[in-house]
Length: 315
Image 1 (tube, helix red, strand yellow):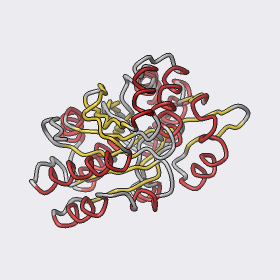
Image 2: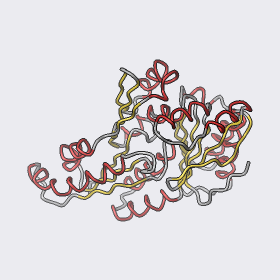
Image 3: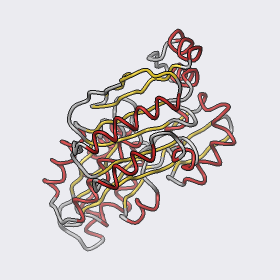
Image 4: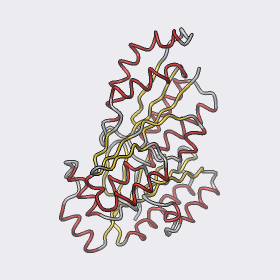
């Protein structure tokens, strides 16, 4: 059985890795004023757009995910021919309509694929599964990497499906945003009141940075630390300890950063995390944060994703 994999461009994994393993990307288009860029995980294009537009006006951005029709067209024009079963893994449905769009498109795809496959000389059935990763950005990458590993190991679709859906429940995403005012203004632009003015003002005045946690579609503060770099260091230390204790459910650690990766690698605690992963046979993936991620959480944000049971953060 030929198994295909699809992610959206908010999934923070290196483009070279996705291309190497033939993972298709549903691009998300970002518009800031008259400037428009469709995010295809091209890090150089993302950084150029970041420096030109995001830093000053990113909170005003509009993000436009693939529509139901665009997803349907992608499948019927290519994926139903190239594969027999496709897993489409999306950003959490609590933060984006991509899952719902893909789910709605799947009904039409399953109704219309037969003549397309027949014309390509294939009369066997086609199936697809839309998987809500229940997380964001680097944490989405954990599910995608596991899907790639399982497919390479020759596992069948039922086992892959069960594993991915189980893993989504236990994927832990953490983020340290550098600018609470930006986060608040972006949230307000989207009609999200989760970051209040008082919290933003207090946090900025005292230089308090939250360590945000995402799991099962819910996000909230796990800790509050004075200073951005101390907050990142505390996060990296926490994650390093979980790696060193052998608590990860998969040998995967995903990091993404809202800027050049040299900035990520210079942060305190990074070397310990890198070394902990290397010593415990955990593969470390680093990528520039998606353009969608940066316009939503701000330049310079740090995101970490891994799979482990339990959510306790020790500050």
